[in-house]
Length: 430
Image 1 (cartoon, one colour):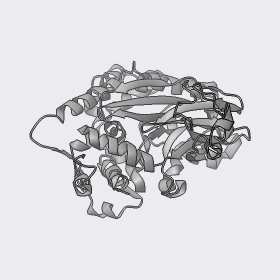
Image 2: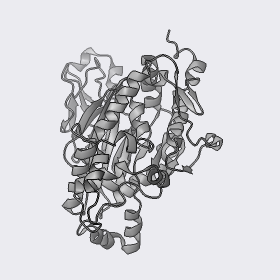
Image 3: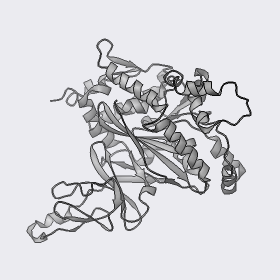
């Protein structure tokens, strides 16, 4: 029997108001329980509906350790199905994406299913019991919001709206930045492995105490390269995007951070490192034409840094990119970075997004490897003896325990504490 599986009190004791035990990051049993409980009960980002534009188009991912298919059905709706044949359990599709036509056909015994998961045909069907005719590809509860497709493995739980609440405003702002109000995935995906627990990546996104330290070698160098240049001299896009990571504590503190129930939140309540990007010819004009001057100004004036949709999705609305955490083991996480094209926006906006992702989020990033090094150091360091706890007490306010929408100074560790309150709730035995 497992140490934590059979002892709910021991599992709950891993998280306190201002600290968490190292087993939360290191213990394989805790990781397995996370895949079953937390990743099974939460609404997990699957993909964007622009990845399956035509009937029969599909995209495959894992939610926790369970393989699923996002597919465009013949009625144009987007469905999420278990990627498991009802016969022997074979994956019915193994490619990451493609078009299956009107049916999925198991490669083992040719059981055939419609794209809504219902069973269509079994070879030599008379040899099976009649009850097998009710078996199909299990449907997973899913919701599509502004093109973002989420799924929940558990049959029962919080509704989509109750789970995300007002945090959905960050997705709204991202979609509204398109003059036509719609997004589409552009290009491929940048994928790379992080040798750390998935929570380290998610927590770090709204940790504003580290950038000026961890990124001194990359962003700090970029900042020094531009020192002394005339204030009215146009900055190269790379300098414009990298240098703000080396801003001081006051800058990040003044940004502000906001937390919502169930682990969601964002930094950049007042402004962010994306706030001072230079304008792009034709974009503001297109936005004003679509929304009117006042509405366009409000949309573009909302410049959030990172929004976390706990536990899987993180978005940067102002730069039109997302990152997705796909946990593999207690000390291994696959991170995906995707870029969006804003329909009706000039191509120069997409070019800026692509450059940003290459500079910051790709395996060749000159900034991302600073974080990657620290994550690996934390994972290895937590194996050392001595202090068994990770401290999360910066700017702790006891009132946080009540939940709800909370806004705090930008260098507060509110976001991490908020995530672990959600972790504790989702990890409790059913």
